[in-house]
Structures are given as C-alpha cells and as structure tokens.
Image: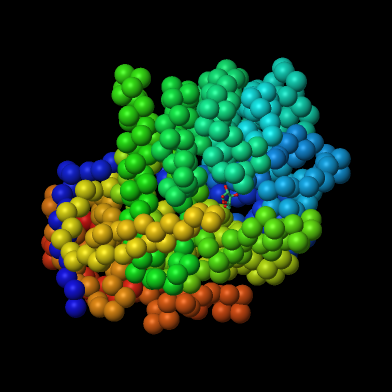
Length: 515
Ligand code: AHR
C-alpha cells in the first residue's frame, strides 16, 4: 500500500475557475452535428430537429461553452452557405474530412441549439481560405442590431435579436500542414491581427482567441506562438493550445503520466506570452484557451484513408470508444486544467457527441454515456470555485511518453510523476472538492489530507471510477457497464481526511461544512 500526504490552506490559492473552463466542441465532422445534436425525425427530436435524448445528457454533462463549427472544417467553410432558406443552401465538398456538407445546419441553427442547451456559443472564423472581410461580415451578421446589409439579412432570416456572440476563435490550428490554407507564423499573425481589428470595429465587446501551437510536439512550437503573439498581443484575449493524449504503445503508466506534459505545455505557453509582454513592456497577462483536449488515437485517419471513402454525408468517423483507462488519463487532464485556473480561462473538451466524444448515439436509436463522461461531469459540477495550491508528498515514478507527429518518432521523458495527481477546489459555500487520480496500477493509495482554514467538514459525496478491466467500455448494448461507484473508504475528522483509493482509479470527494 502506498501513502500520500496533502496539505491545503484555504488562503493559498492558484486562482478562481472561470465558468468557460468547462467547455466543449461541436464540429461539422462525422456524426457530431448530423445524427448527433441534430436529427430531424428522431423520436426525441423537437420541432427544430434537436435530439432531446442528447440534450438531456448534455445537461447532465454540464458544458458551459461550445466551440463551433470547427476544427479543421472551419478552414474551408463559407459561413454564408449555412444561412437562409434550407432548400437553397449548397452542398459542398468538405476538404478537411472528405465528406459532403449539406449545410442543413448552420450558424442560426447552432445559436438556437445553444439557447436550448443552455450553453454559450464560441464561434470560429475561417482564416484558411477566407480573410478578414468574411470574418467581420460574420460578426456583423451575428451581433449588429439592424440597419446594415448583414444584420438586416439575419433579421430577414427570422432572427430579429442579435445573437450577441462574445467569444471568437481566429481560425483553427493554422500552424498545421494538414490545415486548409496552412500559413507561416508571419502570414497567420498578420492576418489574425487584421481580422481582429475589423471584427472589433464591428463589435468592440467581443473576445478573441488567436491560434497558438496545435500541440507541444509541433516542430514549430514556441517559435510559432512567439511570432503570432508579436503580431496580435494587444488585439487578442486568448492564445489557444490543443492536446490529444494517446496510448499507442500500450504503456499505461506513461499514458496516465501524460497529463503532466499538459501542465508543462500550459506553463511553457504562459512563459512565452509573458516574455512577449515583457518585450512590449505590457502589463497584460494573456489568458489561455485550451480549446481542444481529450484522449484520441485509435480512430486517427490520414488524408489517404479519407480519400478512399469518397464524399459521404455525415459518415461514422472518429468514433473513438473510450475505455476505463482512457477515463483515468482524461481525469488527469481535468486536474491539469484546474491546477492552471489562474491562466487557462477557457477550455473545450473535443468533441461533444459521437466524434471523440463523451456522448454516443445511434442514428435513429439510443444515446449513452462513454467512460469519459463521468470525470467531465464531476469536473464541471464540482470544479467551480477557488483552486488551492496543495503541497503533495507522494512517491513518484519515471515514464517516457510517446507522442509521434507524422514520421517523427518523438518520446518525452517524465522523470517523476507522483502516483497521486490531485486538484483541490474551495467552493463559495465553504465546501471543498478533491479530484484524485491514483496512477499506481497495482497498489491502493492511502491519502491523508489536512485542510487548513475550513473548519469542520463532512463528506457530501464520494465517488470512484475504476474497474478490474481497464479495457471495459460502454456501448448501446451495455450502456452502463462502466459507471462511478461509491467510494466508501473516506473518513473525515474535522478538517482532517483520510481516504483509500483503489489502484488505477479516478476519485471525486465533495466535502461540505459541518452544520
Ligand atoms: O477534433 C478533431 C480535429 O482535431 C479538429 O478538427 C482539429 O482542429 C484537430 O486537429
């Protein structure tokens, strides 16, 4: 049995979690939109074609913002194709995913869906094949009240009130050679700055995220971010970063240690942003938008795979089936985001339904929760508040995480991953939430927590996710094969807690003030 000691003090905080930290992502990709959130004729669909069973699961999952419409898709998207009478909308070849886009669902349908789902929209503009002009027109269409060409067109389309979209992404992964309209940092930096200026002149209240590096393993990571920021620093509110965790080599200890590299990635992007601030003598401390993150590796596809399949409409692609092991690594990523709440103010789980998603559906059939659903729902529900700077005393293990990029075989050392990965969040009502990942695959972990400054606490909820079979999954036939169970081994004596965590387990302990 291993042991860990944790010391917390209510006055020692990292920062407050922004509600936008608990976001997700909907792309025109596979069955995320069609057959996912939107399926006219489905038994649970409303008049607008929004699936009620999916909406119910989304409400339980608890995303706060949803990024749309891509992703790689946005870099070839003409937003004008998705507005106005549906019968008149063009069918287009989508060069990102080699599918046919029918445009039956577009910006207005997305905004209406957001209102029903109770989430804030985050729209991305196309800076791949389009320019600053198309971007500022979209802002005018969405946010200008009336009396101009694009705002009056929105009204004519049946939306008299402005959509008031606050959050905007300036393109997507523009550093990636796979991206439609891929650019150098100089080209992108200048275009993003120009688009930002025009978009803000239309609506000064919007907030903008520029594309940082797609991933930490991009050969241009660091140089790209710095140059983009030199062009855009004073014009934007966020720099973006993305991460997809993998276990290509079947090295579970390294997979579970990989979220520690997310910590490093965040801290490196912060350092670059602050270095640019120093060079500009700027007091601004830029926020980070981690607007794509998840586990994804089994269903990755090359362009050659996509070409072979022709141009299907809403094909079942990137439908990753998540295991218990995936949910553990995913939970580690939630902890990484919480522990950087001071700078990561926005984040999007990629994606929401069917495509590398916590929610799966059958077109015309049922919807169910994947294993990763549970840690996200707990992260969103219990992660609101002030993240505390915990002192952790625990054994560590060395790992080497394999994260290939194209033909480059890249291995990243993680010299000392603590067996316990932990985040602690003090709620506004005097409670405390603990998120705990035991990364020891064999041994249980006893944890002693001293929570100073809280007074006496009592256990409100304690749940664990673990399974003798780390490969267990949920499916249409067995939708609840994997689900959280009660964590019984929690004792609370005043502000001192002791817990026993099962090997390879994700755990959530919510404590309330004793009355
Ligand atoms: O989320 C799937 C894809 O991953 C997105 O389209 C792209 O931005 C990223 O590479």
